[in-house]
Length: 97
Length: 222
Image (cartoon, rainbow over all chains, first blue to last red; front, side, top):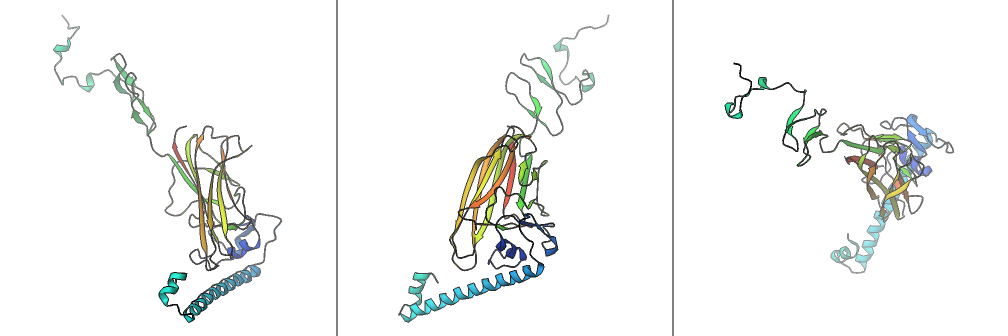
């Protein structure tokens, strides 16, 4: 994932969402592509490449939706405070933005 | 009549040349013993420095002070949940600018072996995150065995936590540190544990930079 924003950007983000522990790794840790995916834990099934692609896309979609919802809620909450008569400085003092 | 004895006063200052001295051993130095008599300092090994033994004893050549061993290993893949110990996905830091001194550690399935006895500074830094609408806590633990892995002792535990803000990502970090007296390089072992207050604490891993890593520095002799 992007460690600055937290947005998933690699199939490893999908893999760690499947099981806990160090159940997988890479035969070449400098080249983390699907063909280099190895499974350390025999009790776990190796997902298909398509599952990894789709899983990452879903994680990204969930992340973006969550972020958008949070921003919308923040904006609507701020507007409601304004509607109650608070000015920007008072709102900032309350919620920090 | 041949001269057989020369008094000190007969020898003028600055007159005895190197060629007039008796041969000695390559690399020896001349010193004086506790009685004030000339004595030889035995030849040292390459890299050693002359070390005073104080009054009453001649100096000797000994290993130079300073750091002789440093090594950093890191986890190359992220994971969620506990790992006791972290057994997989270790690599020695191999960035183009990475530095290392000495022989370095040996790693097998997450068990680290020391290359030599000595006083070792061991540091384990674990970075993680939360982005699942939940507060998270993590621990980074160092465990040491002195009996070839027969049993391990927790020698350092550090805690980190993050309060989820439901937006983006919140990082957390824990660093455990211990100074270990490795008296037998053949029997001492080190392992590193990642756990937390629930099964979903996370650990960063990366093969291009140190996100979760262990650092070994040999500080001196045991």
